[in-house]
Length: 233
Image 1: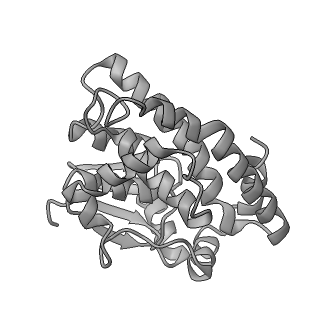
Image 2 (image 1 turned 120 degrees about the vertical axis):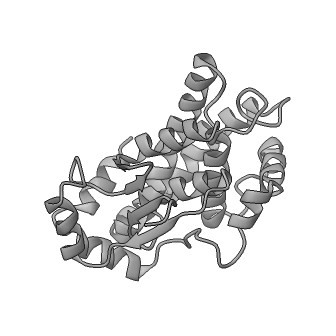
């Protein structure tokens, strides 16, 4: 096996996409194993690779890491993208948690019924404009990056989140000039610019094939129920 991290997940965004983004921002090449059948997932379970019976799983540094937030934090620490001290790290994690709340709601949209999906879209747009985006606009008022005036995993997550929002609502950042400028600076970083180019390992928005594959592999999970729970946040 090569020394590259190996990512075990579906051929789509989901809980792995932020990990892909962070590795790319750190300039780390990685390989991927796509789950396409229930049998692959059951083999990972049988082999004891999934501590909580969930993916994503990342194999790196002699470990098989699970739980997406733990994986993300490990990579951020390893590549100096997690602040210089505890005070910076707690602010980074505060910003990260807010972004994850927002992104998780978007992530489960494809698994909802049409009626529930429209309700959730309206809720996400409202919460983005009233609750989430103003926080990051204010944080970027007089600085280039969210914490410590140095690139951190929170900046990478914020770029990913704002691009996801723009896929749904192209003009959503119109009244947030600091966030627009932030996007421009982030896109100019060579590793990130490379990840944004066609042919990279960045995944497109989920389509029907992705949704059906996830449902088939994780046939024991009620995604619509999860989506409905998230919509009540």
